[in-house]
Length: 80
Image 1 (cartoon, rainbow, N blue to C red):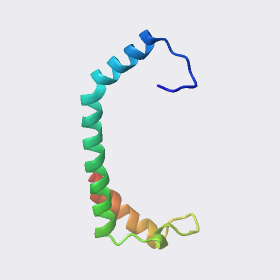
Image 2 (cartoon, rainbow, N blue to C red; image 1 turned 135 degrees about the vertical axis):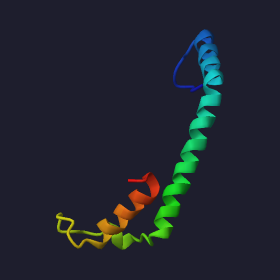
Image 3 (cartoon, rainbow, N blue to C red; image 1 turned 45 degrees about the horizontal axis):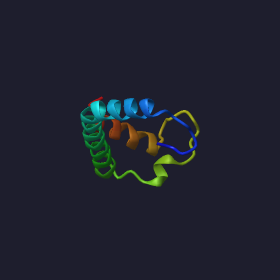
C-alpha cells in the first residue's frame, strides 16, 4: 500500500482479499478490452483512417470525408 496513508493491517488485509477475489473478473475484463481494441484497430486499418479524418469540419457533416470514414469504422466495429 501507499506510504502516504496509514491504513491498519486489517484494512490492508481486507483490500488484498478483495483484490484476490476480483482478480479473475479483472482478467475477463482485460480479455474483452483487448479484443475490442483489436477489433476497432482493424476497422481503422480497413477503412484507411488517418489524422485527416479528425481535422476541422463545418459541423454539418455533409460531404465530410472524415465523418464518412468514421461512420464505416463504427459499422465495422459495432455492427451498426
